[in-house]
Every structure is written in structure tokens, then in C-alpha cells.
Length: 59
Image 1 (cartoon, rainbow, N blue to C red):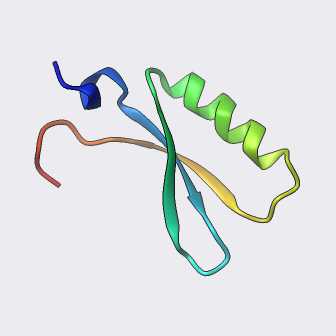
Image 2: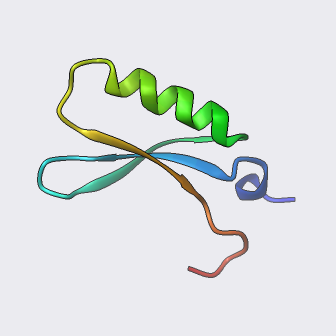
Image 3: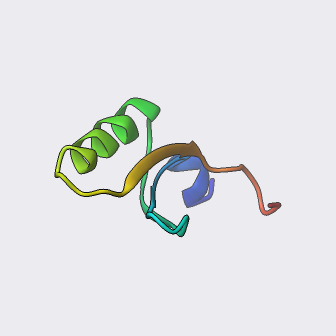
């Protein structure tokens, strides 16, 4: 098992210019959503998204 399969959910920050940065990986979607909500509540203008990380080496 690779680290990617153990942490299949990512929180991604998108700024006003559309630049995207992965800020963390999590074991469950619910955990990732909690983290994204916490970041968004901080008053910053960035958008935080929860995305599933693809399995395997493709992509």
C-alpha cells in the first residue's frame, strides 16, 4: 500500500488568480472537509476545495 492510498483526500487552496496548491492529505473525506472549513473560517479570500487523489501512478 502506498501513502496515496492511505490518504486519498486532499485539501487544495485556490487563490484569486486561479493558482492551486495542495495543503494537506487526509484519510477520510469528512476529515478533509473539516480542515477545509477551518481554513475558510479564517477570513482569508482563498477558496479551499476537497478533492479525491487518483489511485496509482497515472495522472
